[in-house]
Amino acid sequence: MNGDERSTVERLVSAWLAETARHDPAAAREARAGWAHGRLSERAAQDLATWVTARVTDTGFNADEGPYVAGPERITPSDKDTVHGWLRARGHQV
Image (cartoon, rainbow, N blue to C red):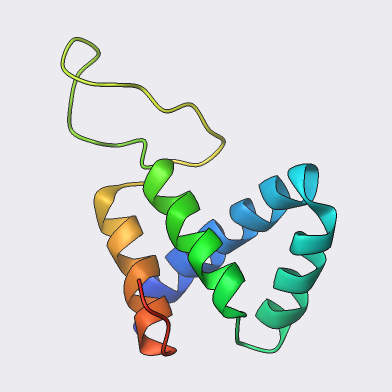
């Protein structure tokens, strides 16, 4: 993984953990502990994969062509692919 990919994963995992903490503090604590050790549980990995997919904000569509996904982070389809690749490289089914 190159520096740009690592930066993307770190940025998006941070945003995901912050959002998860607001909605499910226990799951966020579990995921944060795994992240601190360089690994996520299968549940956390699947939650991250779903989260990043659902929050792709830069779809290439304009306002008349597709939905706008509001969020604190700009997430491109390439960012989603980077996170999914990172998860697969760690043995997770995505």
